[in-house]
Length: 185
Image 1: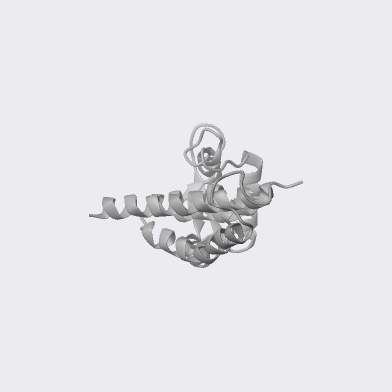
Image 2: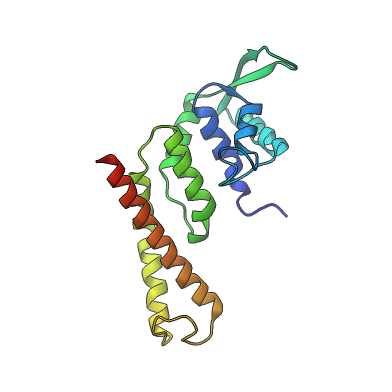
């Protein structure tokens, strides 16, 4: 069964190629478990090359030449104009689910930093997108008779997990936005 976040493979690879001409080995190295982005979200070398091939087939990445060097020549990759547009839209779009913050949002924030894009607009959009969800979960906890302390209420551990996770995400977004605003001053 594929990992639930496998849908990140192509947009993350596209974002790395959109940073400037590169090659598959460099992208795969960044996404390795010990790579710069691998600490947030890792992708195996074969899956990285597969994602790049799909991006090439879709016309979002082009093979533009060869880089000579030690060993095999490396194929240079560059984002096409359509690829750069798609990448920017993806980097600007908040994640849809609270569960996607750990991977999807964190990797987008790091990719935005790498591309010298402000991260505050994405954090603000994410807060706005999650506000109704967080409020609904908070109200559901109050409706269940929960006084706000863990272990109270009807014993629904899944509901408790969702409320606590939502609160954690809400605090993370506020703290990250505060740090970003302080850094901008």
